Image (spheres, rainbow, N blue to C red):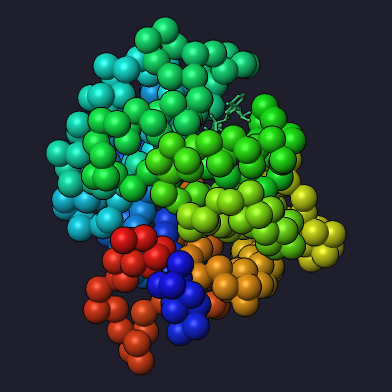
Length: 311
Ligand code: FAD
């Protein structure tokens, strides 16, 4: 859009942070403290994931409310179809609405922990597109509805072309922005963006960036999401793999290189999978030199819709 192009011209980058609901009450409190600190980095928004099978459903709703009303953070609530009859979806949407949340990431969801394959719940929805359609019908334009995109295939579909058609259905039914699965190869992402645009999908695309905190987690996540790791990443990380601080330093350099390439190609909003940790994300933002500083203090984060070129 014109606003996104203007932001790109001004080289104004914006960013957002994903958090997940911790397992313990202490974990929740620690995360609130961290959210409060990360607020000072000036994210355009944060999002809170939805636990597989709706396990942490009430916690997700509660955290959205606290982030939105106590910390004043623009918040996006993830919502999935997994184990969610329509009545539960209604409750979650109402809670988000009443907390002043205006952004939902509508997802099919991972299978519940005890199941290998995803199954539809009776009285619920089958695909993310059904949830998008339902939210749009129930709430009109109240929510900006995000949908998931997969530059390298998803867990139960590795055909990128078919996934783009399914992505188009989600957008045509009311999706207003796309957040992607993590990736480490900028070229794969940029090629995919071209294909998405060629398919007639014009909404903003937000790249999912996974910082590197330990070597084991880096390998696990790359294998789990089946994404391509550029060979020079392995070459850089392998020699320092037993030294977490060195892995973070080298990893920061690699992820910064990835982010710079995206920014050079006009992708001006970066979405960080923080894994509820502040350090690696902070190191990347500082290295990119896009956090508020004495020379450019934080007045107010760029409003989320504006930063993505949404009205
Ligand atoms: P969909 O778009 O519905 O696709 C699911 C499958 O159905 C795909 O294989 C697709 O190709 C197929 N499909 C879609 N439409 C059709 C059709 N018309 N006909 C036939 N097949 C079709 N999971 C969670 O549990 N909680 C979270 O908070 C969460 N957050 C996420 C955030 C992001 C940014 C991403 C990328 C993923 C997230 N996930 C989360 C994981 C996600 O729920 C899984 O990857 C899930 O398997 C797919 O969800 P989806 O919304 O992309 O589903």
